[in-house]
Length: 103
Figure 1: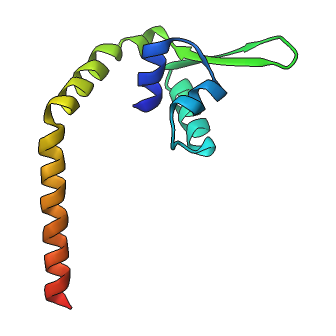
Figure 2: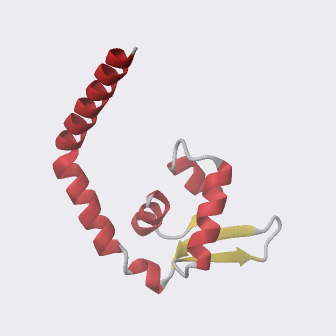
């Protein structure tokens, strides 16, 4: 989701630029994700014949069709963030109480 969102917002990006924008994503995970998205036909990898070689990633036509659903999911997330955080806190408190009762 993060990679698709970043490419949808900013267009073609080099690997290092993507890595900088996706703070907290490991190099290994980003590489695996880009390969999977390329395999699925959502991302295009272009190698420019320069020295050193420049590699860029961008959404394919199929990948672009995800813009609407991504925006809808982002909108939903923003509207319901407080509810999600409240549910998470309630869950965590329930887990702590259950753990203390079992001890």
